[in-house]
Length: 124
Image (cartoon, rainbow, N blue to C red):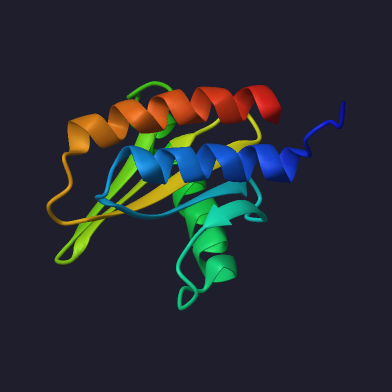
C-alpha cells in the first residue's frame, strides 16, 4: 500500500477543516520559521506573505505571553472589519492559521482548529 506524503496528509486535514464550516475562507500550516507547509487558500491570496506574517505574529505572541506571565501561548486572534484570523500552535514545529468571515461561529471554529492542530502535530 502506498504511503501518503506529509504534504498530502496536511492538505487533507486543511480540506476537512474547511469543509467543517462554511465560515472558514482559508487555512494553512506554516512552520515556526515561516515556511508554508500546506495551504487551502484562494488563488488571489499571497500564501508566502501570510506564512511569514503568521510565524512572526506567533513568535511575538509567545514572547508577550511569557513576559506578561500568561503562560504558554494557545492562540493568536485578530479581528478585522471583514473577519478573523486565528493562529494556533500545531506541535512544536507548526502553526495552524485560519481566516474566517465576520459572521463565523468562533466557538466551533476554535474547537475544529484544536482537533486539526492535534492531527497536524502528529504528522509533523
